[in-house]
Amino acid sequence: MPQQRRHALGWIAAIAALLVVVFIVPWGSLFGPERSVASYCRVWQEEGTKLRDRQIAARRQGENGDIFAPITAAMAGPGDLAALFDKLDKVAPDEIEPDVKRYRDAMQELADSLKEGNLLNMLTKQMEIAAQTKGVEDRINAWTQTNCTTSTTK
Image 1 (spheres, one colour):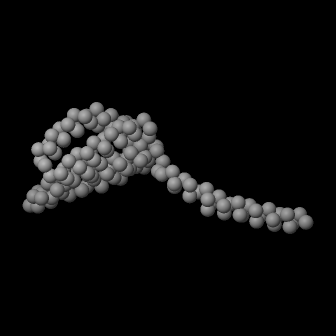
Image 2 (cartoon, helix red, strand yellow):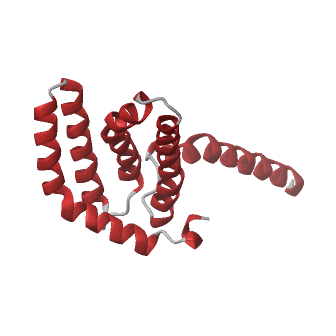
Image 3 (tube, rainbow, N blue to C red):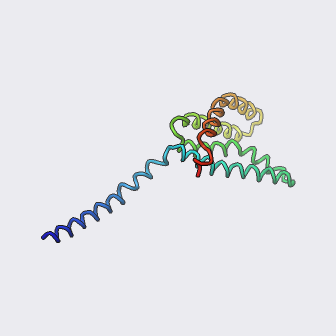
């Protein structure tokens, strides 16, 4: 009898472990990415590097005679920044998240104004947004420089 009981308990434990793996472990991914300094710095490093590399490549293409590459990159800039800050907003710690969200929204607004094709409106919007986001940009820069050292991004 004790051996049958151990056998039954073994099955119960195996089934319980399977239920945990099937039903509980996936819940973590449903709640989205973790908001933490490490997650923010990882996204900043990885996505920021991709954006910077695209900008450098466009500048080099311009230096090599493709005059449209830098212009296209400049026009895509606000949209690219909005996409970067959207990713950052999903992982930003509570202390910086409101500024990250505000900057993302401002860059999206600027990107939308570029799509309208009215150069005067776009320039006006750019000056307006630059004035509105100066403090936000300064806070994000300071926070990122303080928290995203080389040791926290590895």
